[in-house]
Length: 292
Image 1 (cartoon, helix red, strand yellow):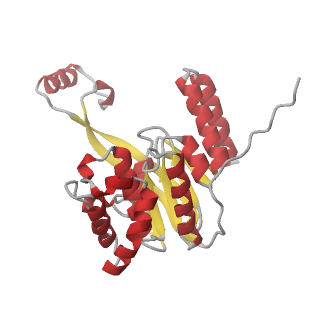
Image 2 (cartoon, one colour):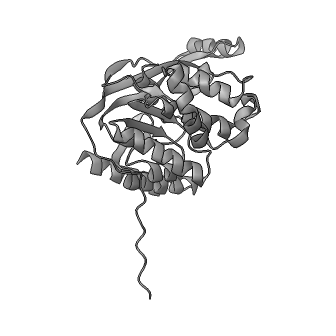
Image 3 (spheres, one colour):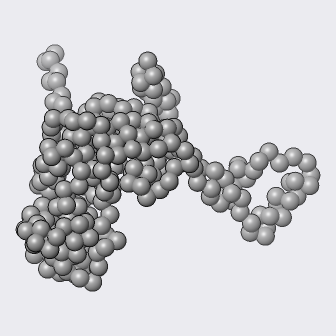
């Protein structure tokens, strides 16, 4: 029987690491949301309570329940690191980015950063009715570049985005992928020390991924730090050097992008196949290894 070929480890571009740039300490985030489910009743007892519950349902009243989006999340990140965040929908990845960016205040805990983190979301400053190139100017100015720096950055932004002549068309005609790639190119033009990216790189082709990875590596070589949220664990594996797996608001694993993304992909595969026991056993093993 021929010897099995060892699988090559593919990971993001490694650059020299510096001092800690982001420190997340015991962060908790909780939301109060409305629910019509009886599962969230607070141990009602007695005939009157049951009757009150049914009357409230008939009258359209909704109960408020507490959702714990993040639970005691802690980690440190150094300049030069490319950190991927993996986990199922609703696990808390995007919430964590918003907390790091300072756009959301945690119920407890704190985030310390050496520079103001920039969440890839300059779309708030962009105008769909304007052309891509007009929005490049608008976005660069919104990110703090001078007019001269903006004009100098435009060719690189257009090349990185890879949208071609569409840059002269209104952004409202763009696909979601084209929109995301242009926003990413604008964000990197400002060379932020801490860049937070939420799903922006999942819509590009291989050429765009290669260009964007090199752009992020250049940012990190200049003592920058990058966080990337993606539902595609393979994207994390290929573009990051470290990965953090978040599940139901908790950190399940924190290690190299290759190992963490592969563990998550294997767990998610078991889950998709309906193999709940195998998925639970794998997660238990990973959690035990992290705590040991």
